[in-house]
Length: 215
Image (cartoon, rainbow, N blue to C red; front, side):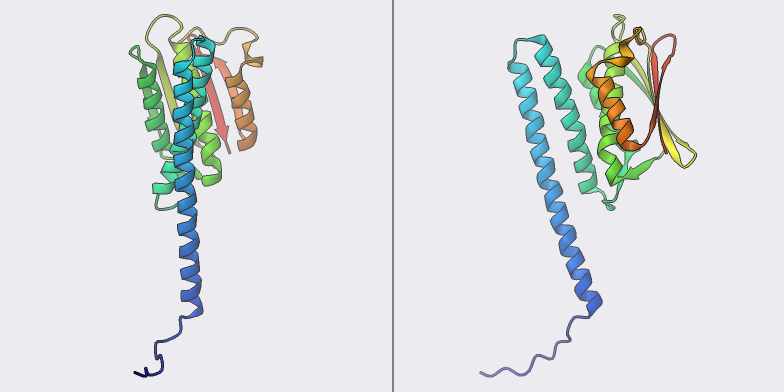
């Protein structure tokens, strides 16, 4: 049976470009999905390795790395599920991640959140997530050093054209000379440089206050 000529209209240039764009977006979502699954696997392996070790120092290091990888995985999950993959809801991330850290800390840790709505670009998402993780975990750890349950305040507020993140605990404060060492402080400085931000440590009496200002 002979078929007649195909009379369907040829796709316009705009339609062809839109179809190509949709395919690229789908590929990007698939890559993000695989990256998220890979990060979750690495996070689980780190946690498992830490639990199998008998050395407390190794356990602490593995737990810290597990939390860092978990923070990055959460970024990929949020971007994957967001309607606009170019923006990252920093406020929602802080609320969820810091609460998760406090539950993992145990011991009745209390977290006070004062968070204004702030979004950052996808490029800033991972370094900001790691920054939040480092500062919050440090505050929870040192806030409990006095023997009382840790009490931590996290504030996020607009400043000029950017925003400021403040994390404060009620622990013993930063010992003299300790601002020059420690992997957590090294990470904080490195992330601050990557973000083009400023960081300030302040003796809050009691405790330590860290303010990161991102332009």
